[in-house]
Length: 274
Image 1 (cartoon, rainbow, N blue to C red):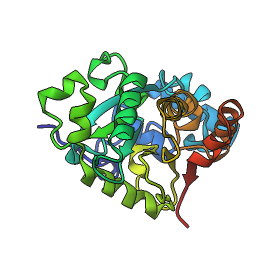
Image 2: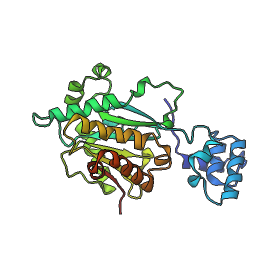
Image 3: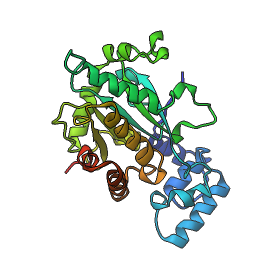
Image 4: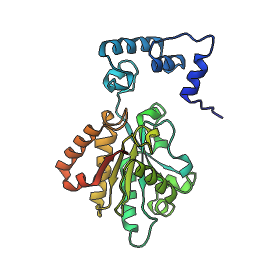
């Protein structure tokens, strides 16, 4: 069993230890060094950059950080996964999103939900098929909530099955938390809801990204929503590494809308709480 120790608790333990020896004058950089996340040489480089730039680690760009911590500025790998409600949010991933239904399948919406499933399967590789050489922090996981994530039928990507066994509890909880951040769910959906970093979910001062599929009533329109999610959001690390960037996401939406029409502008929300 792995023991997870919150960083603040670990910092307290280390600071009160008689063997504590500072690597850096910066608190966060010092903790990262003491816990082995960064080497002393990497911390020295960060300290030098901070002195020159006059701004904290959280504002260093991905490109600059990449020179010190390999992988920090790399493109995010979009993946998909089937998860039960107890496995959401996923641990350690760079960012994540969720396909949220308003209702379970009915005779009137079943065809559309199957189109959404087909787009989900076609757009992203399965997380379980990604080599371990790609660290979790470099993945954006889009989740399809299911009642039992251990069911062997999931390996077949059978859309009939995953629509029938969709976990509505996970969707309701996700929409509830997004509403705390001023997310709106007035349409029939489904919705793509995303948070970056993963612990920003439900926090009023953090951004939540929502893509509304209510007006997407054919496979091409549904596919375009997923393509936007993948190409304009997931694959641009500047949009998500330190939390979603409001201005950059707005530019991405406009660029995509210029190609595919006004309905893309209407479909996307990037909001936070008051």
